[in-house]
Length: 581
Ligand code: NAD
Image (tube, rainbow, N blue to C red; front, side, top):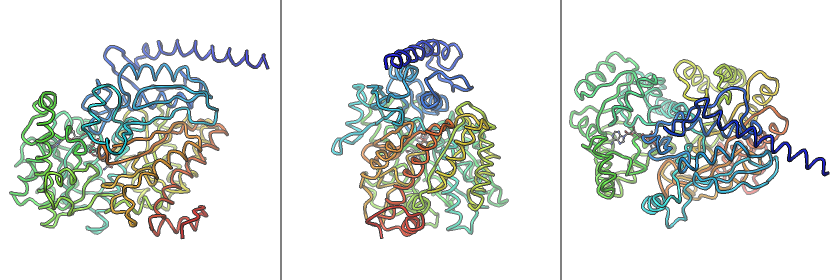
């Protein structure tokens, strides 16, 4: 007994010593510059932490901060307005130090981006649990949030920024591809060939739009107010061309329409100015949507302001800024509604812009639907969602091998095959090489077992698996994922909490619960997880549970609300749901 204790404490001391060296090494190797605050992905086979479970957490934290496209990386902003990875640089450094010394039977607790505790739990428990921007209902608004943020008490985690699941633009690309594919199926005979799709915002999520439109053979016109973001999309191979000249953009779209040529064109300008201008010109798109950061009025750039002017006003007079942004959003939505009245297919792309326009008194704001309700719900009913993985060692060939597994195992899903084929052709990896695939109930567990076996056999290195919070059973967001639920249960937030609790029972590597992601403060409750597949038997058991419970609660949630696809799956797969008929 005493000998065992001695050897345990020797092992602990070894980890402590090793990690101390590793911190220096991480800085020395250029993964973190404590002066400039630059963070670079950690790759390779060398462990810095006690095991791959903990190392995977560390590498995904570095990954989100490396691939970040937030407007404010100096303040750890990753994407989606002000979605952050940690509360402050001091918190970041403490998280890193804590992970470097964390033991295989301990759990790190993170409260809104601040590491607050480490508890001795047990080996099968998650190594980290986190909760971001969870405000009590009555106080869950931006005003109260910013007050707390100023005092350093809270952090906005968006969906995948604060839960370290962000993998760059690809993470949203397949969802965007699927949405435009569904629009094409429903309205245009299965293709966007020769169709003009108008949208705005080339941010972290929005920059998936041009490629997704092109993958569906359409013509995309993308309005973006920040030249830097346009150039970033061009450099990343997401956008084909751009101009600051309105007439030139119109000409390019007309020509592409005539030739039925798939192309994406960026137009520098403010959506609240450009959309009404297109309307006045009677330039009616076939499809219209938007991905400006309307979920947060202090992120949306008001009409006629440059990015610099907006930044200045935001700092000097935030109230005036929000007022101007709300007025601009109204103009923006009025134009979308007019386009729809003239025959365009319009949908909100998950940014709450209709509600903001509605709140300024525009009563017709909700005359067009949200994208989940209109196009993606059947996927969620089947337990599908944006499942994703990265090679923790940074090997692109591991992702290639896993693409082959997807093709071999799930060839019956033709749309998934089309996605893989196009993703292999068009997607450039950002940070750790990654792939996203919308897999469903049953498929995720099957895939997880195969991957873990491949890691065990040394065919590939350790793999991190996670997903967006936009998923089948992990979110309540009444103007987005749960808009217009059959039974009216749109605002019931029990489901994402149950999801997180179940996934903790399963033994995910980490669990995250968020409030306000996607649509802004007070509009959503959501949950995410991370799972490191390290090839051990123990991990296989945890992963099989996790990849079954996680989509399983989504199927049950939709069956409970009366959706037939989910009820059928419950019967076919024998899921025990005692109150579901
Ligand atoms: P982001 O903050 O990274 O980028 C927003 C972009 O919009 C920036 O490039 C900004 O310059 C530009 N912009 C701001 N105001 C503008 C205006 N008036 N006209 C033209 N361009 C303007 O945000 P993001 O991560 O790309 O997310 C965009 C929105 O989409 C957010 O509201 C987010 O919550 C939502 N979202 C949707 C989904 C989905 O599944 N559809 C997923 C995640 C996020």
